[in-house]
Length: 304
Image (cartoon, rainbow, N blue to C red; front, side):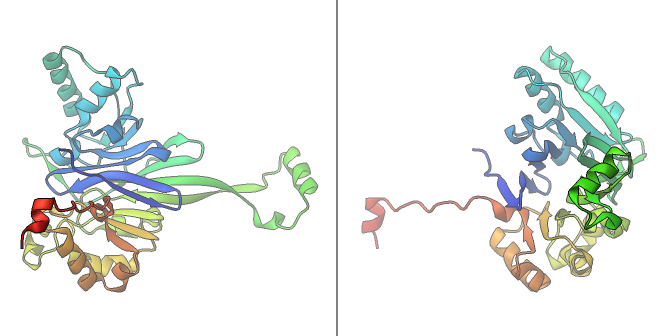
């Protein structure tokens, strides 16, 4: 039976997905036509044309071949995978091997993403990759850096000196070739992938994104050393990081499945206080639909 996915919506930003450490992580933003990480390529991702991969660990990347295969099967365009440098060749080889096994090599667009190099998806939507601290070590000893991504909307704003001018005057200026507007960036969603604390915290388009998907794998007091060793965030890190962030909503992802949701709520309330009780910070997986309690059968009702 498939796990119930979480669905979060805030002021026109809708995020579908699932995220538990070591099991599966993916996010689909249908209205923006983007996804972050593959998980096991659930159906929510198949209609999304642009997937941005944070790193190559299996729980984030296992569904890559299935995604491209299924899009070919349903006659969709191939879709595009954006990934960190160093992963392009391994992923192309992996697709080739699946082509040999399956008998059909799926079409795939694979593009290397680089920190700070914008990816324009539409005139008004840009994805900006940024470096995070989650080094992925290859068998040959090399290291591949992980990436986070920010989805940034661009709007045109009237230049201050033209405020208050009548409409006809603005039209005349525009026809004369005068630039009367300037582009303004509005960070909508930022996704850190897996990461330790780092310079990414200071990036305006991360800390000011309206919604931040922020990894926090470890909550237990005894797991601080494990968080450090694996380049993950611990809840203790968030006590320092969150007050410096300006995001309207912060969704905690990749929480260890060892912790029950009831325990997660209690820990977040204790460690983050007002940030949690106000609703600004929440666990992404706490946005799953609430399960209805089964009505007791007649035989159960008669017992006790």
